Image (cartoon, rainbow, N blue to C red):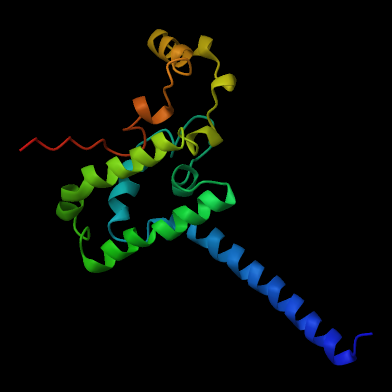
Length: 176
């Protein structure tokens, strides 16, 4: 059978695996916290805008955080988002977006990338909270009721109409 040494070795490997899994999940959880997301100087601009929206403060007391809108819940899409987030940290370190002026200079490109990602995923992160079948159209104003009622049939997704819902919508650059 197995020697005591083999059993101890297998036990240590198993314990190391459990610890690694715990540390990995703790790290993912930490990087999804709003305090982590807004710790970069450039993200403080987004945070101030977000604090003025219904996703931050509302009658129900439910708050959507940065990760609710920007990080998928499914494992593989989440890992992809985390890996691609390196560019945000890199641009912060390089000073590309470290002042309000530089941030504004790049806002259109940054927002366009987020919108394209959301469009490609059928606004997956929005749908973690908002779903067509759970909307009470009778409680919406006439225009919203009409648009939400026909949006699924027209292939529309949340980001098609709600681009400025949590952050200032940037002006499209002039064609040169």
